Amino acid sequence: MPRSLLGRMLLLTLLAVLLAQALSSVIWLSQLRATQMEGLITSARSLAYSMAASVSYFRSLPVAYRPLVLDQLRSMGGTRFVVSLNDRPLDMQTLEATPRKQAVLDVVDEVLRQHLGTDPDISVWFVRPEDLRIFNSGLKLDELPRSWAHYALSLEPVNPPILVTQIELAHGEWLYIASLLPEPYTTLEEQELPLQQVWFIALTSGFLLLFIGLLVHWQSRPLKRLARAARDMSLGAEVESVVEGGGSEVVEVSRAFNAMRTRISRYLTERGQLFSAISHDLRTPITRLRLRVELLEDETQQRKFSRDLDELELLVKGALQCVKDTDIHENIEPVDLNNVLDCLVEPYLPPNGNGSATQHGKAEAPYPGKPLALKRCIGNLIDNAIKYGHKAHLRVEDNATAFVLHVDDEGPGVPEQRLEQVFEPHFRLAGSQQQGYGLGLGIARNIAHSHGGEVSLQNLRGGGLRVTLYLPRTAD
Image (cartoon, rainbow, N blue to C red; front, side):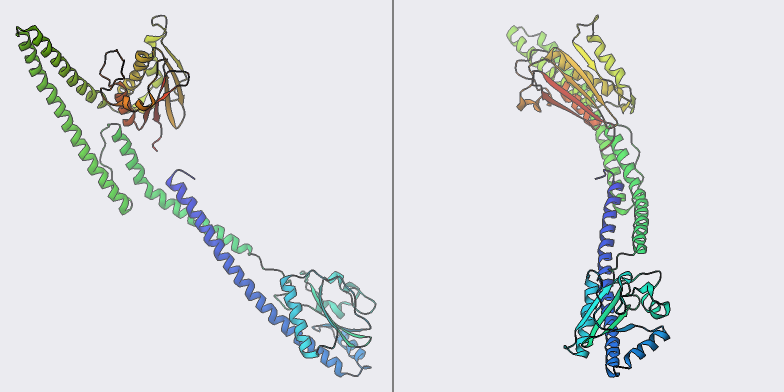
């Protein structure tokens, strides 16, 4: 299935048009065939009545006059039937019966027996013109004078089958009647879907897809603008109000997005002011309390108060640092991730470093994002790997869809039930002696989320932890 709205609409429209056209064509063709079959049976019945009248006429003639009448008919030419008297039924190669041929044969046989009775021996066949035999000598159609039979039994350039009826008038006397069915039933073939109908279906489908494609493209432009604005806003950029346009539903979505943008902007502004005020208001009383603690004479109480103040200051600094690191106000611009990685890995490479970091792979193109935020995000992942896993092995996978960075370490890994919990602020695994606020992974994930990406963890089979940073290059 196509991923775009335009592709899906065109595919579904094409399937619906083809299904509707196929269904209507089947119904139309079945009705056409039924109508043609009804007309064919009516024409065959009329032809059989004429045959029965001819047989009755020849029966009424004296036996000696019958050859004379036949000679006169052949000399006149242009008769509907080719009639002859034979002393035996002629043997010819008949055509394979089809539903239409069999219907004609049944109708002709039925009418003849109704008018002539059941006593005469009657045979009704369809034969090809080249297999037709006439007279006792078995002459072919091409061997006869054109005035005798060609006008009645040929229809150039069509080569229709010939209906041959042989009726026993008396012992050793067989009346031979050959004729064509009237137009348009000469071919006796099943009517297929006409080429004009196929072209009509193709042209209507093409025009319908063209107009629907233009309509969807026209209606999807406001959605693309809305998606672009939502992505920019997720990155923290200053986003202008989305122009309201398109259908009523799209206009309603644009209005809701503009209202949401206004509320989020107001909330971020108020949050920044709030934390600035908290930072300012808490520093003064904490400093004042430290001065008062220094004046205490009881050293035990002094140590207890100092420890409580250290914990309070640590919590305040951690909260403020979390807000500061995840709420980076930068413009979105193309970021050279190769340069970012080189700057972050260089301190750990020999000879200046201890060789605790390696890198494989390169970014194929700049990534549109916040330079400082991305550097902080990747730096936190590398620092965590070296701090808790002693080594950081970086592997880059980049394509037109996404930039992916794997950071493997050589540490003990993380228990499976704790893989998500380590992203929580101030959470640290038991036994971790390194100093820190426990905010690095959480800050990295928040920055990745602001770019529409993700940070995930996976324990390696051979030991160690793999941290994967996924940054999409195209908006989903």
